[in-house]
Image (cartoon, rainbow, N blue to C red):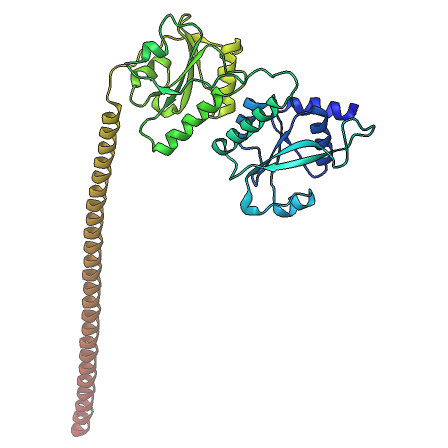
Length: 376
């Protein structure tokens, strides 16, 4: 029992306990000791997905959360779990129930685990309502003993900050911390949504939720004056700035735009662990950012057209150069051929002249010999 209690304490300190085949028996003991049902995720991924950690942060008082990662049907069968590959990711609720024929008044009270599969593929939208409903039912049945404190309220929506709502989102005399995601509003919508979701995940962190902070996002590639006042350039997007308006101090993200790095920056801003420097952030001016990005897009298209035209001109120029070079090579080859033919002609004429001289010389010699004979 002491070992099971120790494991339960260690398990509670974690977000979601990743268990293996060897740890399954010990995990079941932890669940029995904790008095809570277990929410177990089976996933093919090699790590716990963010949506399940988010659910854990909301319902940690009502469940022991665990996950089997890198799950395959064969591996699950080894753990005594029957599941098809198409069923994953899936979540089962494991409840402790008295074994058949056993009663809590028995000297050796025996229990067994009941697995309740939740319908559909596991996701935040599909899984959270079912887990919340099961927890509510169990609470009404007195399964948790004294009522646990309710989960913290959801963070405020992540709004885009503009000239119209700037003083509402981060007034000069506002207490606490303003947190801006500095994004490029001209990127594809799915890229922008991914970057916004990272900020939403930061809002759900335990050390962030409920703190005096206001989260917003700024189309920084449109509001370059704001970006410049922070000391950043558009090439450094996406980024994050934390700003204390009353103190006119702030700090910017150092490193990759990711939940852990942003979370450390924001948590440090709330706790005092993040070093801040003097920073007076300029308010966003009134701009039609959609028109700005459309103008940028049209300018980019025009630049691409100009580059294509330049490429075509260059190709035509290269074609002319190649044609001229081929013509010159052909002329040179013809010239060499003419020179070769002239050389052969001259050699032939020289040969014929040489033959003529030889014949003439022979005739002269014969005449001389004949003349000498006559004189004798």
